[in-house]
Length: 179
Image 1 (cartoon, rainbow, N blue to C red):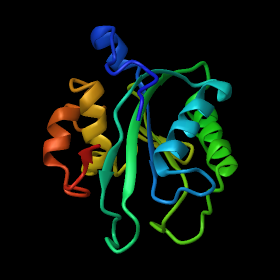
Image 2 (tube, rainbow, N blue to C red):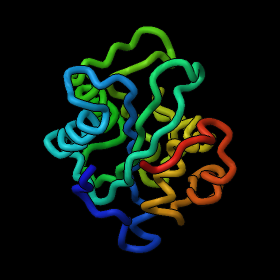
Image 3 (cartoon, rainbow, N blue to C red):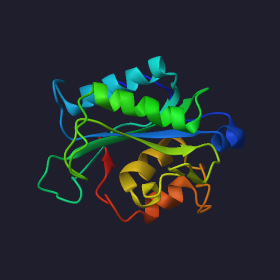
Image 4 (cartoon, rainbow, N blue to C red):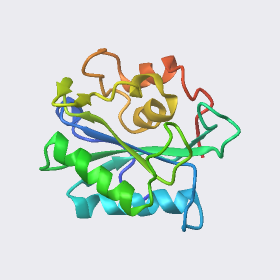
């Protein structure tokens, strides 16, 4: 699939420290021709919501988790700039998911679109119900692998480890690979 954004985050440590990181995932194509087409369309919806993509990974494929008999997932990561605060960013992601037919039924069920706010700069902790950085992102190769692809030196605000190190240590989605 054609990449429509820069493939690496530029601007050194300052850019890494203020990075707003969003993970995208899908294993149901819905009305789109493919999950690749769906994720490309979702990426295009970020800017109208006030989330300007400044870097994005390639798409990564992995077996569904926790049930590998479900359709495989396609995942990627985008780094965005925004004037929205963390809660407003999460609300914008929810609106995009809803527009793409996201059904929030059973946990870890197949889905058309999953958008997760992984990090909002160096914010850490429970911000009125929003836990940052995302509490499970560090253990997921399908998140840390794509992030390491575009920002290998990004450092987890709590764990102090880089995206590259976390991708190597991830325990969930170890089969995740770029397509």
